[in-house]
Image 1 (cartoon, rainbow, N blue to C red):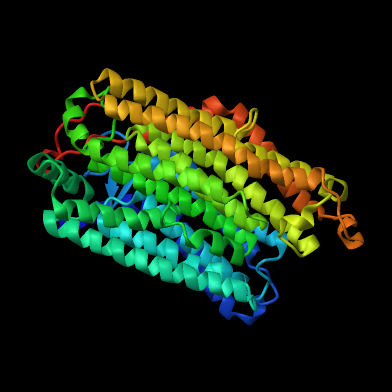
Image 2: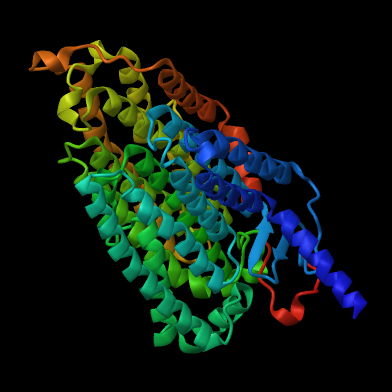
Length: 550
């Protein structure tokens, strides 16, 4: 009895050690709510509390990343791969990479909100509790190893986001946006939960590695025409596509971004996409029966192909439609937040192209893309927020002649938009090049391995991605044309725009990071490769103790 107790205590210590950054976030949320109840702290903007604790959680995640030999749990089935909390979550490089990304982004968003004044002192505790709560849910999404945690993570990320979208007081448009978000989100969550119940009921488990074993066996037995299997997978994919704002589940995105504050839109545009892409990538690789490229593990290629011939066309179709629709719909937009919302949809399509390859190289390219996307998209929304505070408008028409009114903001927004377009020497070029090269290499592999239909599909995605990048130049350059070439028609619209020094510094730092990401392309590529190289082949329960070759 004491031996079992000691083992339980040891496992709990390991689990909490692996979960330590999230525990700091949990503590911060509770601490903020306690301070909210104390009158002494009412005059204090609690961003000064949320920011250092978020940086502390980020530092803890950084220590985990730098730990070459991480903690080894008794249930470890391979090097640098551990299951925690009885297998509900996974502790691996993929988890830690996404933690670093999400926590760094949360810290940057908190800093941004402190500069722009949204939220004010009175509402700061509520705002940052919601923001960190959503971040916590997204971290759980990235590490989920059980369908129950998939659903809990998505809901923990979604519910605070609904409140954040309508956080601005007295803004009817924001309230309508929040209501639409809730309605669409509730429907998507219900559909996803039904899909989870179908798969769990069919296989008698919701544990992803065991589910993958049954998944592959069912595909082999039925030839892919199992109605319960197809519906369950489809319904789960619908829930995740809602978080990704993938077409045709994107309807909420433009309205929510337009109605919400620019700071909230920035958070939703990057954090929710990163967490959802991480979850889709993990689910796809695990359910495919492998978490390593078949070229390196040829003994897994047969099982992998059973899933690949269904997953790859579905993901490729969603990626192509999402990127194309997002870029085409952005043409007619005159509100900058709405334009950036459709840009966000298009970039979700680009990143899904990397996942459509269904191999760790594609997942690695997506991780690199997320790093670049974090900097350039946050920067674009930050400039919109800074100019909104000075001009009171987010419409493109109010940006006429901005090059003479605020040269620095014009240059900064130009850098961020050109990076989103994918021009060198900016971070967006490195991100898109990485995804497109993986598509080309994957196409070559599939053709060489006698799966020409998948190879030609990869080539088609590559062409579609390239064409979409050219199309996107129209609306990105349209914004720059208005700012640089157009002149203000009213005298009030031609007065100088004086952005505070702290805001100018923030935008300049993000712009410099655009170039740093490009220059550190090779190093970030190695880091993203390390983020996926800890995946291990899925083993049946009976083989959990078998030796796994690195």
